[in-house]
Length: 233
Image (cartoon, rainbow, N blue to C red; front, side, top):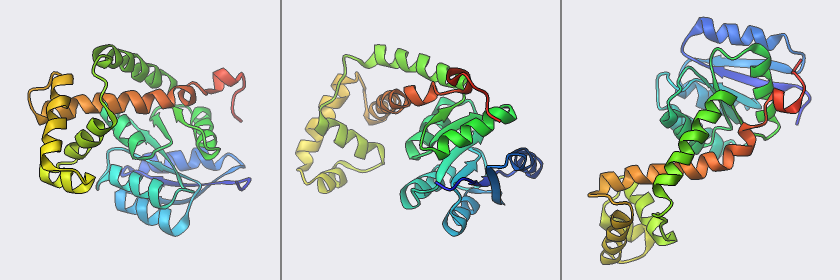
């Protein structure tokens, strides 16, 4: 990685965006290369400029999660770090599932934001510590509710496709199995999850995904300046 971390900032609030940029410009190893105001700007900047880290808000015009997924999938050298006021678990989950490497709440101190950027640029995961603790606490509750409802690999495949809005026939075609087999697996899924219909089953699946996603992030979320015993410059 280059000694200077190149950063793109995308937020639809110009004053806040410029404030963040001014904070980062004070660090010799950080360089703000471009700014934008919506999801499309994020994709354009990532494609054209290829910053090391892209700071993005969750709530701004356009499909933000689709933009995160595009960047993380098509431009894997660009690391996405969410910087937002949203403490919604769903927003955090969808952003991280889409490929974001970190989730930081606005109001964070300048040194902590710098630490988050450096961590993400180094390939680590960073989540605002207090928010990470909240997510992990709720994760344990989800585990207690669903530990008896483990799905088979095929059942997970089926319900994941159903969660995308596919019909049984479309799922059968995609997975190269019969429609009857899809119906059988969906019946097993709903029974295991105590779901009365497909919508309830998909909602239960979200809890599984949260458990998998946040479980993998446990170590990364704990890597804070305090844990390291040093404060960033």
